[in-house]
Image (cartoon, rainbow, N blue to C red; front, side, top):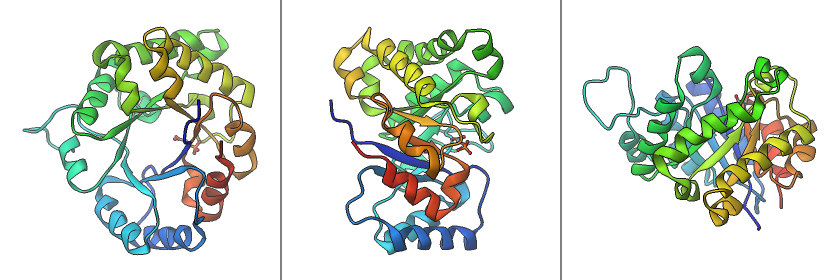
Length: 254
Ligand code: PGA
């Protein structure tokens, strides 16, 4: 099964109007004429519209994603941003269930599943993050945690929903730590995720794109991306440097 890889940049709470403009300019200047992967950037909400304009003006084929979305469709939810609003301003993707949202803001599996459903209902591609804390890995509970996170979405939305979604495996202990999973560790979990979806729908499982995230940089991207079940990456820190991000994009090929 040939799956087009994706390299997505999660800018987190970084950037300014000036910094965003120079980052996009630097990415556009060296962007490959025939990229081997789909490329996405996920700036903070307040910059989405302007970054979308910058990308369009630079004529660079990079899709826009948000970092989070409300599970509700509209109404009295102060501070929230709906899937319809994201669609309205040109987002194609939205990250749901990032480990920072799960661990720092208490988002549970059910809420993440509802966010996933809200995104799908508005035609956005949810980028569902799953990943185990260090204590669970050390206790041998990695698969149990990943299964629980995945099953919440499978139960609410069905396996078919993964035909219109992307998964990112991001072990919590690898995020922002400089300690990436080894290619073997990543492949083992990616294979497990594909298998779990495959128990319900083999075709969807073989087509689903599963990205790796957690301390990906230019120097380790290739060895991670060449694993059979790794279909690109979700990149944090290294997505804020144009040369690193472009080198990671170049490493993603099938
Ligand atoms: P990192 O973050 O690349 O800085 O480790 C990845 C992520 O949180 O998506």
